[in-house]
Image 1 (cartoon, rainbow, N blue to C red):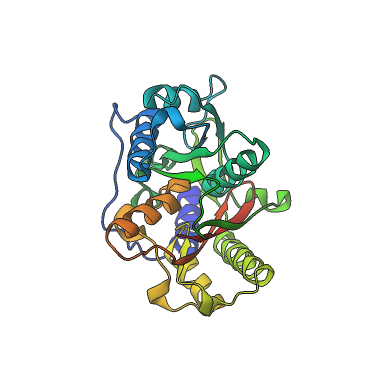
Image 2: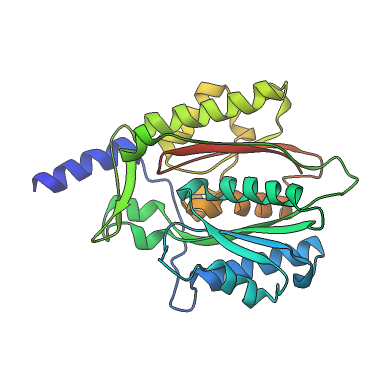
Length: 292
């Protein structure tokens, strides 16, 4: 009873009101590699790039990590990306930022590489205690982007940032034997602080203000975190975009899914300036400044 009461207090502090109205839970056929291959394949088709042209595939995943083998080579095999170097990264919910930063660095380092796929695939529903309030705000999903260098258009990745803070590692985590996520009540405050620091750093070092940004796309954590970030940065609600209410928190897959869905529905347009920030257990925080 004492443990359950404490859990309820943490749920109230971290989650607040449950605003998620729908979420997806994977079935036995929707493995991490199957979901990743589908998302990466869709991204390649939309970019009009063949699997054989992919030089690098980076998979972000924290929810179903294993010792060996890594999962990314299996994703490349499913795709038919026979020429790609493929490997996994973690970084928890900052996995997309981590993967994109690594992919951009490797594309720059290899003069004969020009195409990378960054794909994130998560089974977040497996990492929450069954019957808990947290189960209502997480979902399973995969999302992907294609990075290419040497294009003439003034579009793409402008800047990136990723910071690790071991002192805050205990704010949230998943530990054996059950493998269910546990968070401290101060998670929301830490998350807000980290999002805000990320956004201000990227804005300041690129000579920008919040008014210059067309869309803020944060990794969705919880409603209290979203509200705190918006208020601290003075972001207009209509420029603060998540799919939290209909997809729930999908871990590292959240940002690429929003970029895809909101481009497809016409909300995002070519040339729009997007600032995407994320926080994750470790403690990691960072973001991407992108011209669509």
